[in-house]
Image 1 (cartoon, rainbow, N blue to C red):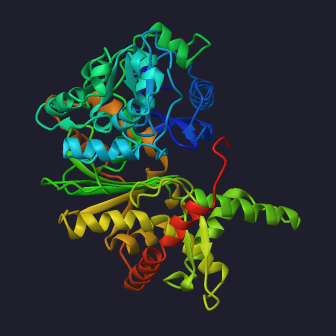
Image 2: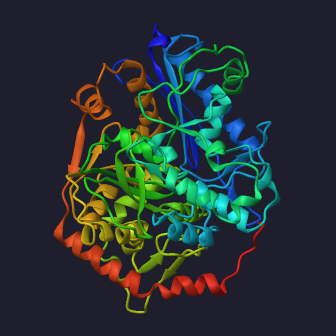
Image 3: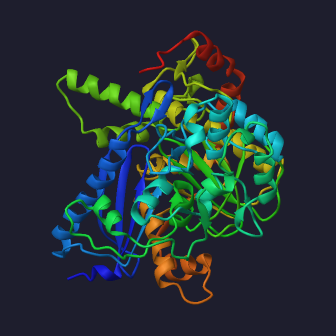
Length: 529
C-alpha cells in the first residue's frame, strides 16, 4: 500500500490536455490522470469556457484517482502536497465575488499589439502581447465596461490556485508574465507599477494595480492550504480532505524548466507542442528586444524566453487529413502510429526539404508580428515534391520562428548555453524532433527519460521541493542532487548537413514571408468560428 500522505501531486492545464502526475518520495511517477480539451475561437478571442475549465480539472482528477485505486488499492483522501500549473499568462479578471468578468483570454491571442507597444515604451522593458498587463491595458484602451469592476486579476493557474486555497498568490515564474518583477525584492517592480498608475487611462478607475494583482511567491514556500471548498472543487465526491499544503502555482514555462533541470544559469530548455518556447537562463543583463521576453525561474533568476504561439497545430491538421485518407481507403491507421510514420519519414527527406515551404501559423505570431494565422503550403514547379520532403518541411517550419528568436540571443546578446534539454510532443518519436532541433540551434540537444511527463511532473517536483527540501537547499541543488543525479538522458549532436539544410530552409522562409502577410490581408475568416 502506498502512503499517499508521502506523495506529491502536480496538475497542469495545457493547451490540448489537462494532466495530473503523482510522485512518490523517490520522485518516481506512480499514477497519472488526464482530460482532453480544446480551445475555441469566440468573437475573435481564443478561450476556454468556465464550464470547460472546472469540468476538465475535475475529470482529470477523477481519472487520476481511478489510476491510484487500480495501481495501489489506496483511496485518495489526502496527499503530501498539491500544486497546479497552466498555460502561461493570459487574462482572467474577477469581481469582488470571484465571478469572471470576461472570458479567459489565452496566450494564443494577438489582440493586444497596441498595448504591448505602448507599455514596452513606457517601461523600457518588452511587454509581450500575451502578458496579463498587456491584456488589461488593451481592455482599458478599448473602453471595456468590465474593467472598472475588477477586484482580482489573475491567470488560469492563479485562478485554479485561488479556487483550491482562497489565496491570491502565484509562483515567481508565473508572476513575471503578469507584470515585470524586481530581481532584488522578487516582487513587482514598484517604479513600473507607479508608471502604470500614473497613466491617464488608469486614473479613471478606483482600484490600484498593486491591489488587484496576485502576490508573487518563490519556489519552496507554502502558498496556501487546500480549503474545504477547494477540496470539493477538485473532488466533488467529498473523498479528498482539506488541509493539504499547496505549492506556488506556475506557468508551463516554469514547470518545463523544472522538469528538465534547466533552472541553473547557462542552462536552457525547449518545449515544443502546440506552441514552442525556448528558455535560456541568463548570466548577464540583456537588452530590450520585441522578439524576446524576460521572465524568471521559479526562484527568480532572469530567463530569456523566445515564445512561439505556433508549433505542431499544422502538423496535427495534416496527420488528421492523412488519417481520413487511410480510412477512406479501408486501411485505418492508429493516430499515434501515423504520427510516428510522419516524423520518421521526415528523416528520409532532403536536408532543406527539397525546396518546399510552409508557414505553420494556425494563429497569430508575436515573434514575427503577425496578428492572425494562415497556415500555408507553397512550392515551385521544380521543388522535389515527395512525401519525405513534405514531412520534413513541416518539422522545419515548426521550429523556424523559434530559430529567428534564438539567433537574436546568440548573435546580439551573446547568451551562453551549456546544454539544452527538450520536452514536449514534438520529441515523442525517439530521435527525430531531437535531431531537427539540434540542427536548428546548432547545439547538442538532450531528452530525459522523464520528458514525457512534462509540465505536471515539473509541478510535482516543485511540490516535492517545498515539502522535502533541506534547510538552505536551493532548487538547483535539490534537482541536481536528489532528482536527476542518476536520470537517464539521450543526447543528439548537431549534424552539419542537417544544420546547413535548416539554414537554407530558413533563408527561403524569411525571404518569402510576405506571402504569409498577404494571406492574412486577403484571406478573411469569420470572427465567430
